[in-house]
Image 1: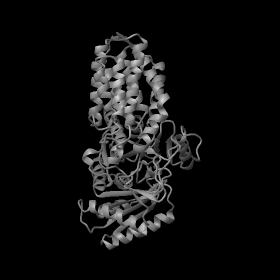
Image 2: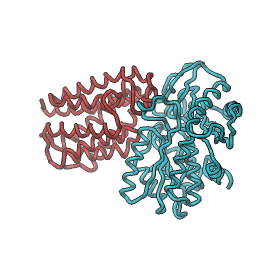
Image 3: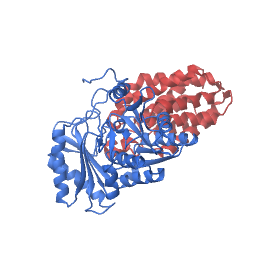
Image 4: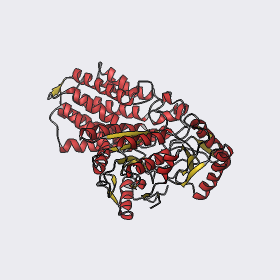
Length: 203
Length: 334
């Protein structure tokens, strides 16, 4: 079972990963976006960590809902509402239990990913976050590490895709050959989850 | 890379502090990133609020004032503002007659304004939204996020603002704004990439002697790269595609409002020369230019290049265009 502390550690690990990879995310966003994905997410996740410290939530669901609200309020762009919705809806699906099982987390994350797809009107194959999130969350059924790896592979698989949503879609054919920054940061989020679960001695 | 800034982290706040110092008629909340017309409330007017990423100055904060925007929310550089800013702006300008959100068609702007509209409506405000999507460069928009919102934003904000100033109700201000958008199309070219403060180097690589056709306002490359063309040739291409699209929305020979807009690093010497070519092409096609505006209005940081926006204008739109306006970046008749 996972408690609120586990989710706080996940958010802290995600923030650390974003900080480590911010330049790379911005670099990936440069040829097909507008070169700010890293700096925007860094601003958001830094605020998430600060919010968790200022207002420590007692339940896993509340931790993620606070994180989602904070991202919406600080990131801007498309990433703010999309990542904010992912975490808020996942948190909402977790409910108010003080501890949640891995199966509950898996189901909640699926709901969160569904909400992202609905908000952005995108589907796997459109070269967006979903190309990492969908296979990542599906692989959670085997293990956290498998989820991180599947998400990472999903992000790599966006390279040959034609972007159909978001700013890169304006480039048409010229979006091909670039890794999607949103899929890349989504993989970081699931890898951070795997790291935290492993550190706790999970499967 | 040299920029006249303190640090990439503070550029937006620093610019807002400067705006506050230069324009005491504006209420600039630097911390919360909202710029409000001081007399926004009390006039019993519909509020007109817009916002978007910074880096496009004078859009939008430069258009806050009499006869145009009631408030604007600047986001980070090339990043849409967050819903909190929009809700705060709406609350600051609402006088009970509702608020129109002018939203450019970019995924981030659309999503954040959508969330803001929901939140503001939960607070009891009446909100209408108009989506600006005038850029003809994006093809096959069924599979993209749709046409981008670019130069027509200025037309929409001016005309909606004039209607609000006259005391028109929210539905009518929104309907006019939509009509302006539907009657407008734009096309842009980039002669250089731009440099965001956060990245510090050009966002795309445009070799010497080439240009990007069909560029957006975020420094993203356009749809096609070609060897450099003359102003005359660029005008022929741009006006040609804009008129082609406009033929589908109105009479082919009606008068137009014309905006020749600089992207930030193209001097007026070039923009006026380019406008001469635009006017020549339009005259050759029998399209009268009812009003023209030439200058840097919807920019893209230090990008060189320009865009052309044409709006098919009837008498009503022209009257509202001519109505007095007094903002930091646009003023006449008052």
